[in-house]
Amino acid sequence: MEEFDFVIVGGGSAGCVLANRLSEDPKNKVCLLEAGGDGKDLMIKVPVGAAVFLRGLFGINNWAFNTEPQIGLNGRKGFQPRGKALGGSSAINAMLYVRGVSSDYDRWEADGAKGWSWKQVLPYFLKSENNQRGKDLLHGNNGPLQVSEPRAPMQINDAFLASAGEHQIKHNQDFNGPDQEGVGHFQVTQFHEAGREGERCSAAAAYLHPVMDRKNLTVITHALASRVLFEDNKAVGVEFSQKRETKQISAKHEVILCGGAFNSPQLLQLSGIGDKDELAKHGIKVIHHLPGVGKNLQDHLDFIFLNKSKDSSLFGIGLGGTINIIKSILNWRKGRPSILSTTFAESGGFLKSDPSLSDPDLQLHFVPALVDDHTRKLHFGYGYSCHVCVLRPHSRGSVSLKSSNPKDPPAINPNYLSDERDLDLLLKGAKITRSIIKGDAMKPYHHKELYLRGDESDEELKEHIRNRADTIYHPVGTCKMGVDEMAVVDPQLRVHGVENLRVVDASIMPTLIGGNTNAPTIMIAEKVADMILGNS
Image (cartoon, helix red, strand yellow):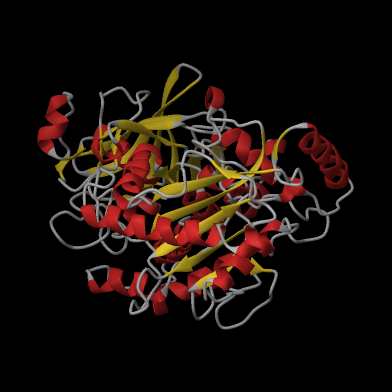
């Protein structure tokens, strides 16, 4: 077996950060394993390509997982797109750069994650970002990750923001500023440097692609990890398959799992770390009984209002839309602002369901297109969508094995709406959202609402939520950080009960943060890289 100092499993947002930071020291020999491709596809670079990959057709750059049937969603299976390429989900997401609020991280520390308070994580947000707005107390401008203003937001966003103003919802120019509440345009992980303006800045484009020529860094793509190798309770390497061949590599110092909220717990379980009774069902030898592996799954459940419009400047299927796309392709090739640079979720907001709350508990994503069932259900014509989700759900789910075959997807059970409080809050959010998109400022764009009459009772609207709600792509928590009996990793993200093994990705979050999860995942990896290198 070829030996490395560090073997990183998973080339998503966290894996790209760690591969870069650990290999900055030429003494460290680093290997990164990624099940997907190199993340350099043109349709990854062009932000609008996210709509193509989101559907999960043929599994291109997307694991395209499905959940187990959800009782709270009337027995439906949910769809869980996850990035399968260098860059992970940052290669196919809407690129929104959102951190959450300070109390999210203070809560982590209060619950046993020592060292993860807002004061202690903020420096790593600043270290990671190169913000187009420049440097101040809450923003950095010297990091690898380019954070930009939306390049060419559609005019309908102004109508959405004006309608929110009609409802006494304030405008917020910076969701990562001192106060998150309000509506505005999202900043995005998009290049703003000359020559690449408008391109997606995935974690791979920011951290990994520029350093691929380092002699001490080996990146192996199309490599599916099957198990962590152990000597007694010490991780010593990884077994993986590539081109129908099984291979092994060894790790002198550490194996670091960066597979995300679904793949990291799956690989732990395949390797013999998890609940011993569940492992026994699949004939897997127990290395260490750790019952919290795969538990504590949390996700942002999302409900969408869909509205048809006669305005062909919006994204849609029709002659006008086709002409707009052709013009946009020409503008893109000339480096001009183009709708091909859109994140789709160009504006949105963070709202309080009750004014007495200290922080927003609802998030809106406004999209100038009809986004139905993750773009898998298409509608002729034009329209717009407004998403609403509950930021800190009470429902908890799990990730477990379907079999001992690494090629089989895990059994994903978010357990959506198992806590009635989530449904009650989502109903409140839905009613606020509908009121905004029916405001006077939106009337020039409105033609008709899809699926709903407009006069539904609360019980009818709850039923619509159960019939149509699904993920907004923020699963976390399945390898929880902490010191209690259900924690999987300690505050240094070392797996409890074994040696030389860490998990570094969104799965370690004890609780969901109030917003999109890509920026926090990058922060987590930056912070742990310093821990590993002895810089913190």
